[in-house]
Length: 100
Length: 196
Image 1 (cartoon, helix red, strand yellow):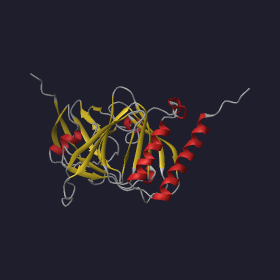
Image 2 (cartoon, chains in turn green, brown):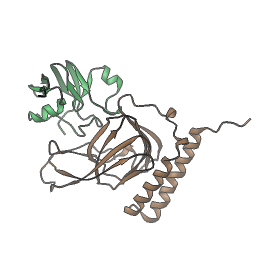
Image 3 (cartoon, helix red, strand yellow):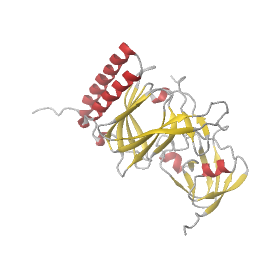
Image 4 (tube, chains in turn green, orange):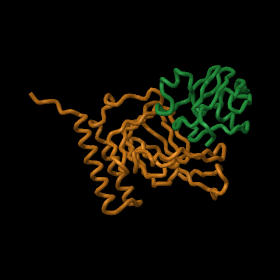
């Protein structure tokens, strides 16, 4: 029998909510499923609408475009919610002023 | 002793000639299905000239996808790019708002085509259905009209390297509309048409 993916606590600072984030789903997918109006557009790592500050915790990133998230941004703690899967409990804060 | 012929200079000249040919086609007949098809065939032929596009001249993506401008025309002109996508790189279904053509130099990229099925009345909600699929590999290409919808995914274990020609340069793109069947949603990125 297939084992259920590990689940972590994902705290979204902007909405003040903490939701469950499965290790095989992106933070954006978890947020939308939880009814949170997370800003996004492409949802596939191309446009950076969902660019966010990873304030705490670890994520793994799915493929994305250089133009959406560069090395320097990554180093400074930015991530793409549409590409980031939680690898621990995380706290994240989207940078867009309003949802799209 | 012969002076080595500079590939970059040859490439620049060839790109200029290529775009002149595109303009010559569209100036006479405008943009329509027939001229778009002709543009695709020209782009596929251009992409076969591997000597002009040695990978060593183009940095690989740091992440998974990168566009290298080859020739970007001023104002409302076209943009010709060499694109590199690493395996797994994907883009959700989207409508560029402007025509485009792609042709492969190496590697394989799957394009899935969709049709929007809702009436557009509900804000930020949309549904799409798949209407076709093609894998673009060397010797092949695709062309799309302004509001055609496609998704892309680099398949296989090699980078997909290709040429992309857009009606407008990427820096002056209209709003791109993104569809998400999983969420039954639609979102748009802001237009860059106001950009200088």
